[in-house]
Length: 289
Image (cartoon, rainbow, N blue to C red; front, side, top):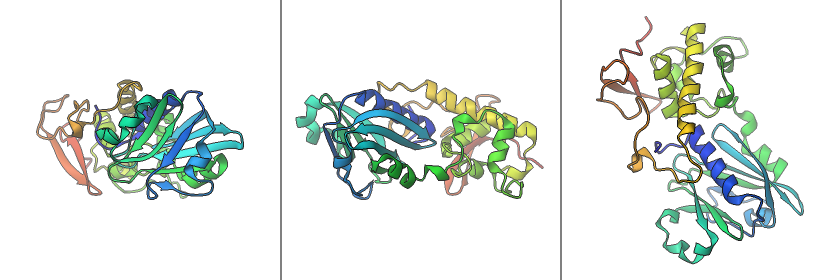
């Protein structure tokens, strides 16, 4: 039901799917099939995970780190879905049918217990994964360089602080581009940035430096609304069906160009920011003079 661009809600869904599938079962099999997607360190992906049990998980923006307890100590698995990655769960009893499973033709890594197999599938090979000693994985993942998770920002003042540099000044870049800077705020991508701006009634071209405290409050509320609405629609017992794959479009403006705005009825417009399509309502989201 979502767009084919994994952002915070899709990644949170993937985290929940993996946690639910693995439970507290021992990992009996692990394999990586793509050296571009999976960083092969020492120990290997399989050697790091086989014999371990899932003990915890965390998500920062679009990144997930799973913590396992193994006989040799704590083990970590970091993964990022890239632009087209998603998690597929199958019963272990279906192993013989894996080669004929169309959904798994772009498998990049898999983890299995006695009953369940979890596979990361990615057609474009832009996903990333690392497995090994937990602390080493945490350092190599780069999550320390990310800004605060978008779900942890609940007020405009704190949101504005994310974008102030050491000088205390806000950038003049369009707010749409600023929202997608993961080093400032982790989790928003092209889709939810546009949706948040629509809910906040802010034009995507608005210079970040021109936002008032009232604008920041509205934007924090808009971020919370778009992420919360999407997260509430996800079910970890079901696989996602993306808009680009024929699923329904639950968004207010995304891919709705040429249709009436749900608030005022004016036609939704489309423009570009950083080479990415942006959708907005020219009446509800007026440019600042």
